[in-house]
Length: 403
Image (cartoon, rainbow, N blue to C red; front, side):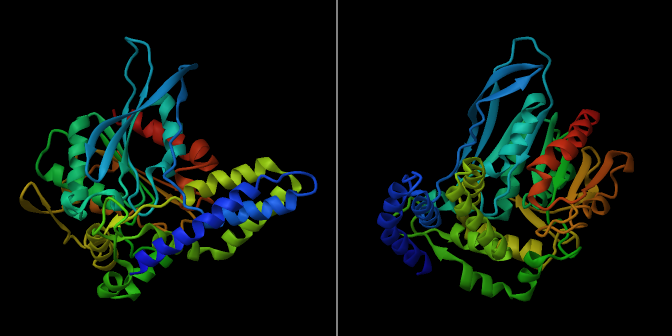
């Protein structure tokens, strides 16, 4: 019912936000303040569509080349995208990187800066997860096991010379996928795996996110956070964790910071500081664009990862190709391991990703690396100056050492 009420509210607000957008163009010396107020009103009330990656060019070997997005594989709940660079024939191939984007509320474009930084020296693929409200119910459910199966399919498709990078939420299912592949002696086990800021063991340095999952029983999440997609979307009737609720959870973690940011945006517009205002627009165009998650995947993640701590306790099981498999990271012996954490991460606290090292106990220590980024929060480990200047050079070196 809440989802339907939200859709009704959105329809009622649409004329007002549209009018505010028109009136926000009143940027003259006498009406700048009025226009700034209308733009703030418009941005607070508008719907935010899925952003574009917008990565059309990069520089390779000092030469600018074009970049084209190509759909490599198309699954009901995900597209595997490749960023195809126009390179001269005969040039030696760069390392292949499969980037697993989070399926936790935001679109894969949240990793735009990650992709942009990798492109000059790597072939890059990314998992572009589909908004569940756009997936017809006829396509069936999507749960934790399906995420693992998708991950294995993508790694098999790209072959054993691929380097996997999982950011935040996918660290657990991707580690599970590589564990299952290792147990099965799959020839397409990746060359290396980099896990960044993920809840491999949420018992380490628990954050607000972790505490919420353990303070409520499982039934609370299903009763209060799962709704049915309304009739006006292709996925009508599908049970989902709506993106607007996830967005509310994001904002509630730092409400004062967001209020201040919007107030500063208003003041920048009043002063005519268009560069700062544009920076605000770019950030919130991404931050406010959210997607729905299939209820099965969301609820199973809450239960398995955050409540049962099934992976670090050694009791996680997944169904793959019709058989039940215990996830056994101790079977991993081939891929080199690099874990990255942010010193100030308030979503996946320090130690949660590093726990992977103990789980992969049969992987030689010489093939393991760990880095804690000083002063970095959650987003800083894959986007921004610290990512580009400090973390990426280490990742680049790690990938080349693991070839």
